[in-house]
Length: 265
Image: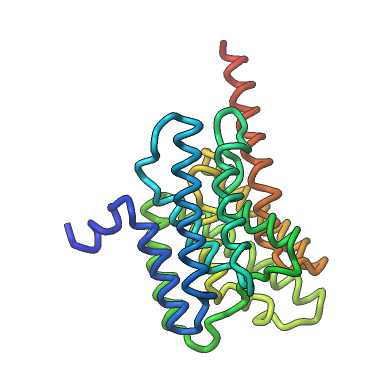
């Protein structure tokens, strides 16, 4: 087994990958707001995870890689002259895992929940990352190549591909409706924000439905709702789309499973 294969099978492969996005993005375009922002985001996420796991389950959580991913995502995707939004988004994100649950499962992707809440309720204090790779294709190609391998190993590649293809289709439709060029409409896909979104948020195993066909349908619906939100000039359309579609899909799946269990009993 190659050294690279061992890394991909290592349980911390996703944190390593998202750290790579941060390093490449910051060295290329300076996407990191500040050192204080990343320390607060990651630190608050991990501390909140540890405290809540102890309070709710009576034990310290041993694997905090999920909290690390949440924290580093927040530090990359939020732009603010203040530090409190980074801490607040981290707390809200982790708390959503323990408070907003349905039949024993949390139904929102943690970072998506915290970011969506902050973008909607504090628009004058925070903004989202809006940087694209521009003409520098090499960083984007490296990240997409590694990202595809990661989601393939996690058996989630079909989710990413469905969303991307649906996004391209709706971008074309949107260009016909608005008069903007097709390349302008697909430009967001070249940025770190969308790479985090397509490789981590919509593929999160804990907050995606179990059935493969259902996963494909949900990814398509997320792209559809994002398309509608973009037509209505919602700046953070992908986050809001997942915020709306993801939990509904989880609840519908849970209710269908419960109904099936009753019918089989």
